[in-house]
Amino acid sequence: MSGIYDMLSALLPFAWADYKFMVNALLAVVLISPLMGILGTMAVNNKMAFFSDALGHSAFTGIALGVLLGIRNELISLVAFGVFIALVITRVKNRGNTSSDTVISVFSSGSVAVGLLVLSYGGSFSKYNSYLVGDVLSVTKGELLTLLITLICVIVIWALIYNKLLVISVNKELAASRGIKTSLYENIFVIVVAVVVMLSIKWVGILLINSLLILPAASARNLAKNSRQYLVLSVAISLVGAISGLLISFYGDTSAGATIVTVLTVIFFITYAIGSRKK
Amino acid sequence: MASENGCGLCKIQINNISVKRGGEVLLSDVSFHLHCGELTAVIGVNGAGKTTLVKSILGEIRHEGQVTFESHHGEKISKITIGYVPQHLDFDKSAPISVEDFLLVGRTNSPVCFNRKRKLSQELDNALESVGCLELKKRRLGELSGGELQRVMLVNALHPLPELLILDEPVSGVDVAGSEQFYKAIMNLKKNYHMAIAIVSHDLGIVKEYADNVVLINKTVLKSGTAQDVFGSPEFKQTFFSVAEGGGDK
Image (cartoon, rainbow over all chains, first blue to last red; front, side, top):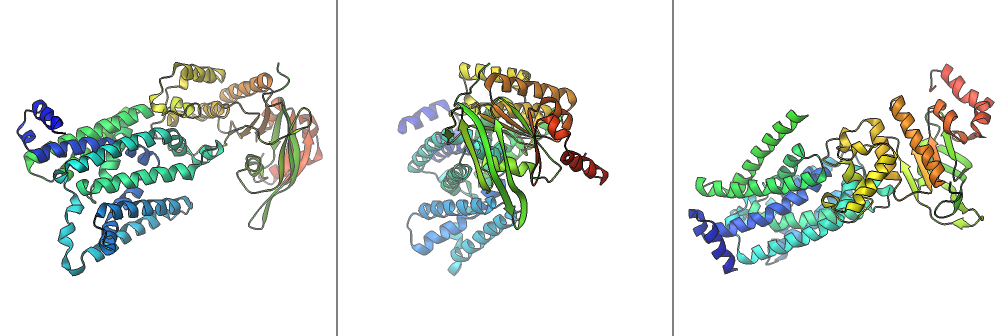
């Protein structure tokens, strides 16, 4: 691990590279952003922007559950509740009910409220403030390793379910008529999204996580003509936005997560303008 | 010309299919059979239950009665491959999915966005060529015209090569040239692969020209036989001409 730091400090002769927390943060965004870029393409294709928003918000209740149950590592309750809520929302969505977006927003605001209610008991909410906007500068070596393992797992699962999800995103009935078990693949995907969102939420923050998932893919979609361009652009935009956002935040002394999302938003509008001029 | 197809299928029997939904009878006691190497057209007015029948054959909706498959020697076959071209594909027109992406999905398990296999690509070129739309390969699915999309859907339905091909209003909203090209491709399939083909159609002119058999339905089978038989029958006149006077279909 120290070899990586030596190499990076040799490669990056900048003032910020002298700070270990900045190097860690850089490694973290280099691991998180491709994850988001990859998953985002499928989330946007399958019209799940609203779903992942609700998922992020449910983190409040996940943390609260951990506190109530006395679980030391809040990550366990976060991930468990995230997977649970992801499966429930998908189930509701697939009922084909026209009011599914209403139900999703009920889940979203309900889980924010319940979480806040529990966490604010006795006026102790400030302890959890960092979850709102996240703090990528606090990432540790062990956590970086977890992120690396997650990235590898996600790439493997992604490769296995990619084709199936692509047909499902075109038309579900068509996918079913070709013998694809649509709800199985959808469930695998939402579980992966839930795990990744919950693992990253500590550094990215509840308020910003959805933007990191949706914005790169949405920007790539403005330009891409096929699925390869879509994926490559999404990961590239995600990386560029995250790295430049992190550096700007260092020099501008702003919140890293917020700066990254702002950069990604600017990129989105630029690609939107280019995309609509082409059409 | 092949006299048998891959699995030796000869006949598809539709036996007493009935479908009810919430007390309303959509289909009642529909029976007929489809033969390999023949094109059977299912005709009827709007709401006659044509699409419901297709979905029953595909096994997508609950129905009474059975669909059975029989070989040349009269033996039962438990499962056949069915290719299906839907009437209207509802999808997100802005999705960054190319024709190539879409068609490769059924041919490989590795992610299609990084397909580098020359053989697959060649196979796909041949398939597109066979329905006269090789030039669509790199286009986005959402950019295609109605006729182009139908031909791409046909290529999709033909892999893996089906024993039964079902087309639900395949050329509705497609121009004359597009429609001719489409049917030329269908006739080639019938001849070369000895496939059973079922077409649901509104276009009686096309039915008359291409169909070997015609089944006229309205909740149940009113008349079946050759195009000539059916078109000359009183049931046919009553269905289409009395409705037309009432301001209905055709």
